Length: 254
DNA sequence: ATGGCTCGTGTAACGAGA
Image (cartoon, rainbow, N blue to C red; front, side, top):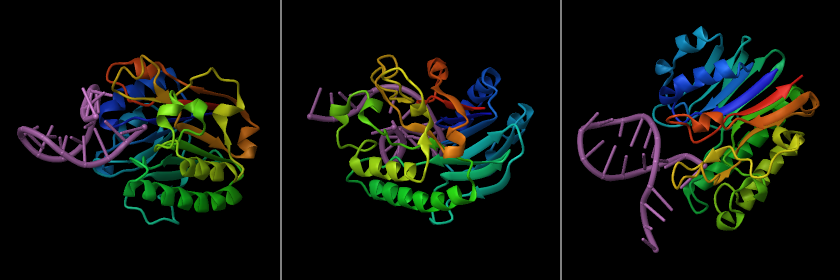
Protein backbone atom coordinates (compact mmCIF):
# COMPACT_ATOMS: atom_id res chain seq x y z
CA UNK A 1 0.00 0.00 0.00
CA UNK A 2 1.44 3.34 -1.08
CA UNK A 3 0.36 6.58 0.60
CA UNK A 4 1.28 10.00 -0.75
CA UNK A 5 0.75 13.68 -0.01
CA UNK A 6 1.14 16.69 -2.28
CA UNK A 7 0.41 20.38 -1.86
CA UNK A 8 -0.62 21.22 -5.43
CA UNK A 9 -1.10 25.01 -5.06
CA UNK A 10 -4.37 25.08 -7.03
CA UNK A 11 -5.87 21.87 -8.36
CA UNK A 12 -7.41 23.84 -11.22
CA UNK A 13 -3.93 24.64 -12.51
CA UNK A 14 -2.30 21.36 -11.46
CA UNK A 15 -4.95 18.75 -12.39
CA UNK A 16 -3.06 17.64 -15.53
CA UNK A 17 0.08 17.19 -13.42
CA UNK A 18 -1.79 15.24 -10.75
CA UNK A 19 -3.21 12.90 -13.40
CA UNK A 20 0.21 12.51 -15.04
CA UNK A 21 1.84 11.90 -11.68
CA UNK A 22 -0.74 9.21 -10.82
CA UNK A 23 -0.02 7.52 -14.14
CA UNK A 24 3.68 7.49 -13.26
CA UNK A 25 3.02 6.70 -9.56
CA UNK A 26 -0.20 4.68 -9.18
CA UNK A 27 -0.31 5.10 -5.40
CA UNK A 28 -3.24 3.73 -3.41
CA UNK A 29 -3.92 6.98 -1.58
CA UNK A 30 -3.04 10.57 -2.50
CA UNK A 31 -3.77 13.46 -0.13
CA UNK A 32 -3.91 16.90 -1.72
CA UNK A 33 -3.66 20.32 -0.11
CA UNK A 34 -4.37 23.83 -1.39
CA UNK A 35 -6.90 22.69 -3.96
CA UNK A 36 -8.31 26.25 -3.86
CA UNK A 37 -11.63 25.06 -5.29
CA UNK A 38 -15.19 25.24 -4.05
CA UNK A 39 -16.77 21.79 -3.96
CA UNK A 40 -19.00 22.52 -6.97
CA UNK A 41 -15.85 23.04 -9.08
CA UNK A 42 -14.02 19.89 -7.95
CA UNK A 43 -12.95 17.74 -10.94
CA UNK A 44 -14.68 14.53 -9.81
CA UNK A 45 -15.14 13.03 -13.28
CA UNK A 46 -11.48 13.40 -14.31
CA UNK A 47 -10.25 11.80 -11.10
CA UNK A 48 -12.75 8.94 -11.25
CA UNK A 49 -11.77 8.36 -14.87
CA UNK A 50 -8.21 7.89 -13.63
CA UNK A 51 -9.44 5.05 -11.40
CA UNK A 52 -9.74 6.84 -8.07
CA UNK A 53 -12.48 7.41 -5.55
CA UNK A 54 -12.30 10.86 -4.03
CA UNK A 55 -13.44 12.93 -1.07
CA UNK A 56 -12.87 16.66 -0.85
CA UNK A 57 -13.50 19.72 1.27
CA UNK A 58 -12.89 23.06 -0.36
CA UNK A 59 -13.56 26.77 -0.30
CA UNK A 60 -13.06 29.74 -2.56
CA UNK A 61 -9.52 31.06 -3.20
CA UNK A 62 -7.68 29.47 -0.25
CA UNK A 63 -6.95 26.13 1.41
CA UNK A 64 -8.96 23.05 0.41
CA UNK A 65 -8.06 19.37 0.87
CA UNK A 66 -8.85 16.13 -0.93
CA UNK A 67 -8.18 12.41 -0.59
CA UNK A 68 -7.91 10.23 -3.70
CA UNK A 69 -8.06 6.49 -3.21
CA UNK A 70 -8.06 3.32 -5.29
CA UNK A 71 -10.40 1.73 -2.72
CA UNK A 72 -13.63 3.26 -1.44
CA UNK A 73 -13.43 5.82 1.37
CA UNK A 74 -15.65 5.38 4.41
CA UNK A 75 -16.34 7.43 7.55
CA UNK A 76 -15.36 10.64 5.78
CA UNK A 77 -14.95 13.57 8.15
CA UNK A 78 -14.51 17.21 7.17
CA UNK A 79 -12.74 19.49 9.65
CA UNK A 80 -11.54 18.91 13.17
CA UNK A 81 -14.58 18.30 15.40
CA UNK A 82 -12.64 19.92 18.27
CA UNK A 83 -11.98 23.18 16.38
CA UNK A 84 -14.56 25.44 14.79
CA UNK A 85 -12.72 26.53 11.67
CA UNK A 86 -14.10 28.31 8.59
CA UNK A 87 -10.91 27.31 6.74
CA UNK A 88 -11.06 23.93 5.01
CA UNK A 89 -7.84 22.26 6.13
CA UNK A 90 -8.73 18.78 7.43
CA UNK A 91 -10.23 15.74 5.77
CA UNK A 92 -10.23 12.21 7.18
CA UNK A 93 -11.38 8.87 5.79
CA UNK A 94 -10.97 5.17 6.45
CA UNK A 95 -9.44 3.23 3.55
CA UNK A 96 -8.82 -0.52 3.67
CA UNK A 97 -8.77 -0.42 7.46
CA UNK A 98 -6.33 2.49 7.63
CA UNK A 99 -7.43 5.83 9.03
CA UNK A 100 -6.12 8.55 6.71
CA UNK A 101 -5.97 12.18 7.81
CA UNK A 102 -5.15 14.83 5.20
CA UNK A 103 -3.99 18.06 6.84
CA UNK A 104 -3.09 21.51 5.59
CA UNK A 105 -1.55 23.19 8.61
CA UNK A 106 -1.77 27.02 8.57
CA UNK A 107 1.35 28.79 7.33
CA UNK A 108 1.46 31.35 10.14
CA UNK A 109 2.96 34.09 7.96
CA UNK A 110 5.36 35.39 10.66
CA UNK A 111 5.82 34.81 14.38
CA UNK A 112 4.36 38.22 15.27
CA UNK A 113 1.26 37.69 13.16
CA UNK A 114 -2.30 36.84 14.25
CA UNK A 115 -1.99 34.01 11.74
CA UNK A 116 0.81 32.54 13.84
CA UNK A 117 -1.43 32.47 16.93
CA UNK A 118 -4.10 30.79 14.82
CA UNK A 119 -1.53 28.24 13.65
CA UNK A 120 -0.56 27.30 17.20
CA UNK A 121 -4.19 27.12 18.34
CA UNK A 122 -5.00 25.01 15.27
CA UNK A 123 -2.13 22.63 16.05
CA UNK A 124 -3.20 22.32 19.70
CA UNK A 125 -6.70 21.38 18.55
CA UNK A 126 -5.26 18.94 16.03
CA UNK A 127 -3.36 17.28 18.86
CA UNK A 128 -6.50 17.03 20.96
CA UNK A 129 -8.46 15.39 18.14
CA UNK A 130 -5.65 13.10 16.93
CA UNK A 131 -5.27 11.74 20.46
CA UNK A 132 -8.83 10.44 20.09
CA UNK A 133 -8.30 9.21 16.53
CA UNK A 134 -5.17 7.32 17.56
CA UNK A 135 -7.15 5.47 20.25
CA UNK A 136 -9.97 4.62 17.86
CA UNK A 137 -7.74 3.70 14.93
CA UNK A 138 -4.46 1.91 15.71
CA UNK A 139 -3.64 2.13 12.00
CA UNK A 140 -3.44 5.91 11.64
CA UNK A 141 -1.60 7.97 9.01
CA UNK A 142 -1.54 11.77 9.10
CA UNK A 143 -0.32 13.16 5.81
CA UNK A 144 0.02 16.72 4.68
CA UNK A 145 1.65 20.09 4.51
CA UNK A 146 2.61 20.77 8.13
CA UNK A 147 4.34 24.08 7.39
CA UNK A 148 6.92 23.06 10.01
CA UNK A 149 10.51 21.98 9.38
CA UNK A 150 11.11 19.53 12.25
CA UNK A 151 14.87 20.05 12.60
CA UNK A 152 17.62 22.30 11.32
CA UNK A 153 18.69 19.61 8.87
CA UNK A 154 15.30 20.11 7.22
CA UNK A 155 16.18 23.73 6.38
CA UNK A 156 18.57 24.89 3.63
CA UNK A 157 19.93 27.77 5.74
CA UNK A 158 19.11 27.23 9.43
CA UNK A 159 20.97 30.36 10.54
CA UNK A 160 18.99 32.60 8.21
CA UNK A 161 15.72 30.98 9.29
CA UNK A 162 16.44 30.78 13.05
CA UNK A 163 13.38 31.71 15.10
CA UNK A 164 11.24 32.41 12.06
CA UNK A 165 7.90 30.94 11.08
CA UNK A 166 8.11 27.27 9.95
CA UNK A 167 11.07 26.61 12.29
CA UNK A 168 10.25 28.45 15.53
CA UNK A 169 10.46 26.53 18.79
CA UNK A 170 6.70 26.64 19.56
CA UNK A 171 5.90 25.20 16.13
CA UNK A 172 8.47 22.45 16.47
CA UNK A 173 7.19 21.69 19.98
CA UNK A 174 3.65 21.42 18.59
CA UNK A 175 4.86 18.93 15.98
CA UNK A 176 6.73 17.00 18.66
CA UNK A 177 3.52 16.74 20.70
CA UNK A 178 1.90 15.07 17.70
CA UNK A 179 4.80 12.62 17.53
CA UNK A 180 4.38 12.03 21.27
CA UNK A 181 0.96 10.52 20.48
CA UNK A 182 2.93 7.58 19.15
CA UNK A 183 3.32 8.85 15.59
CA UNK A 184 6.56 8.63 13.65
CA UNK A 185 7.94 10.78 10.82
CA UNK A 186 8.05 8.13 8.07
CA UNK A 187 10.83 9.96 6.21
CA UNK A 188 13.20 9.60 9.17
CA UNK A 189 12.60 5.88 9.52
CA UNK A 190 15.14 5.51 6.71
CA UNK A 191 18.54 6.77 5.72
CA UNK A 192 18.14 9.86 3.54
CA UNK A 193 20.47 12.09 1.60
CA UNK A 194 21.41 15.41 3.17
CA UNK A 195 19.42 18.47 2.17
CA UNK A 196 16.26 16.56 1.32
CA UNK A 197 13.45 19.08 0.97
CA UNK A 198 9.78 19.03 -0.07
CA UNK A 199 9.24 22.73 -0.80
CA UNK A 200 11.33 25.31 -2.68
CA UNK A 201 10.57 29.01 -3.10
CA UNK A 202 9.48 29.97 -6.60
CA UNK A 203 11.84 32.96 -6.36
CA UNK A 204 15.60 33.20 -6.44
CA UNK A 205 16.09 29.93 -8.34
CA UNK A 206 15.05 28.18 -5.14
CA UNK A 207 14.72 24.73 -6.66
CA UNK A 208 17.77 24.89 -8.89
CA UNK A 209 19.91 25.96 -5.92
CA UNK A 210 18.07 23.51 -3.64
CA UNK A 211 17.14 26.31 -1.24
CA UNK A 212 14.25 24.46 0.31
CA UNK A 213 12.62 23.12 3.42
CA UNK A 214 11.14 19.77 4.41
CA UNK A 215 7.67 20.75 5.59
CA UNK A 216 5.46 18.05 4.05
CA UNK A 217 5.28 14.95 6.20
CA UNK A 218 3.73 11.53 6.60
CA UNK A 219 3.24 10.62 10.26
CA UNK A 220 2.52 6.96 10.97
CA UNK A 221 1.19 5.24 14.07
CA UNK A 222 3.32 2.45 15.50
CA UNK A 223 1.30 -0.26 13.73
CA UNK A 224 1.83 1.45 10.36
CA UNK A 225 5.46 2.44 10.98
CA UNK A 226 6.20 -1.24 11.48
CA UNK A 227 4.74 -1.89 8.01
CA UNK A 228 6.63 1.00 6.35
CA UNK A 229 9.24 -0.13 3.82
CA UNK A 230 10.27 3.22 2.34
CA UNK A 231 9.57 6.95 2.35
CA UNK A 232 10.75 9.22 -0.43
CA UNK A 233 10.24 12.74 -1.77
CA UNK A 234 9.59 12.76 -5.52
CA UNK A 235 11.35 15.82 -6.92
CA UNK A 236 10.38 14.99 -10.52
CA UNK A 237 7.20 17.09 -10.81
CA UNK A 238 9.01 20.12 -9.38
CA UNK A 239 11.00 20.08 -12.65
CA UNK A 240 7.91 20.08 -14.86
CA UNK A 241 6.49 23.13 -16.59
CA UNK A 242 4.43 25.34 -14.25
CA UNK A 243 5.11 23.23 -11.15
CA UNK A 244 3.68 23.38 -7.67
CA UNK A 245 6.26 24.75 -5.23
CA UNK A 246 5.86 21.50 -3.23
CA UNK A 247 6.93 17.97 -4.18
CA UNK A 248 4.98 14.80 -3.35
CA UNK A 249 6.05 12.59 -0.44
CA UNK A 250 5.38 8.84 -0.72
CA UNK A 251 5.38 6.15 1.97
CA UNK A 252 5.34 2.48 0.99
CA UNK A 253 3.68 0.04 3.39
CA UNK A 254 3.85 -3.72 3.04
C1' DA B 1 17.48 47.89 1.29
C1' DT B 2 13.90 45.72 -1.21
C1' DG B 3 11.98 42.04 -3.51
C1' DG B 4 12.43 38.42 -6.18
C1' DC B 5 7.50 33.95 -8.17
C1' DT B 6 2.90 32.01 -8.62
C1' DC B 7 -1.58 31.58 -7.31
C1' DG B 8 -6.92 33.65 -7.23
C1' DT B 9 -9.63 37.44 -7.94
C1' DG B 10 -11.13 39.78 -11.69
C1' DT B 11 -9.59 42.21 -15.49
C1' DA B 12 -5.49 46.27 -11.83
C1' DA B 13 -3.09 45.55 -8.38
C1' DC B 14 -2.90 43.00 -4.15
C1' DG B 15 -3.11 39.44 -0.50
C1' DA B 16 -1.24 35.06 0.58
C1' DG B 17 1.83 31.59 0.41
C1' DA B 18 6.47 29.86 2.86
